[in-house]
Image (cartoon, rainbow, N blue to C red; front, side, top):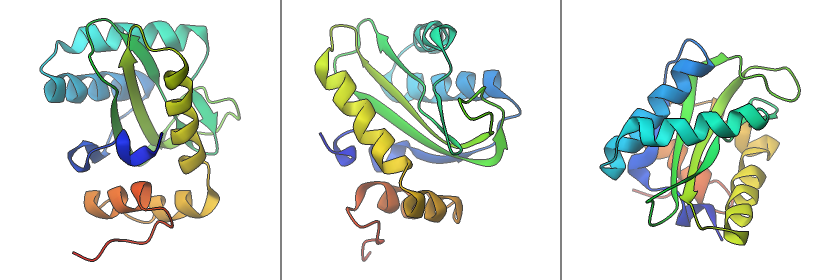
Length: 154
């Protein structure tokens, strides 16, 4: 699985949030809008997953994720935060690069593949540095999805 299979250009945003709770609520709201769903139907499983342990994986990156009943396909939303927020990350550092990953409730091994795909991309120090250098959604999308991170010719 490749990250380009998970994230669409319209699901790459820059965002401002005051704290982890606001961030997760806003991500759920935007995902629900894109999916034609109820924000609470997305937020509840995401919060349940966070209770098991923070999805802040370190180095300023968080990958909140959840299995969502009724979801038919994988959905990802990338947010480049304008200001980092405390996310209870494993390294104690605030996050500013976030991917909300939603998977169908019956997903199994591909769920882990999708998480690994996103994690590998965001934990690449050069890609992370370049993602932090812009708030422009089209550039963010190119950095996330093009193998070497070079912006596409438009």
